[in-house]
Length: 161
Image (cartoon, rainbow, N blue to C red):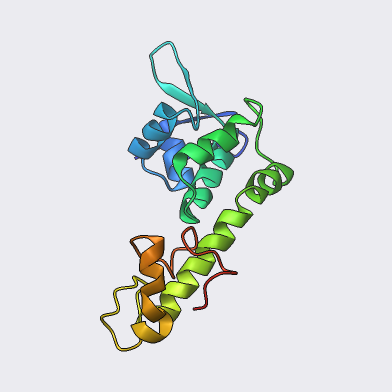
């Protein structure tokens, strides 16, 4: 059991940061090993995190929830000055770079949802609707995989779902 941090505490123990952020201690250690957050060590070799680590952990959790890889999150956090709490403007600037990727994922999920019961977009011609959706197996000429669903393979303007 950890001791709740005072509202005005400048530093948090790993347990306090875990409790307050809702992230396991092991996850915080992992984040630290990936340089997403950092701590200082006390004379007794205990970790102490600055208060801004709470906002950084919240940023990491939200970015992960929307599917941003940790490497990309780390690159975004590296753009921020050390020892400064990320602001709303920081979040807006960093997340703007992710908008196109998120829009693409949304489109892929919509295609998958709409075609899930009828076609998986593979170009196999094994279902009755495949000759309609993929006449003469034109998608097979473009390569393997779920061509109609994966927007990296079939951009929105060239595929009809």
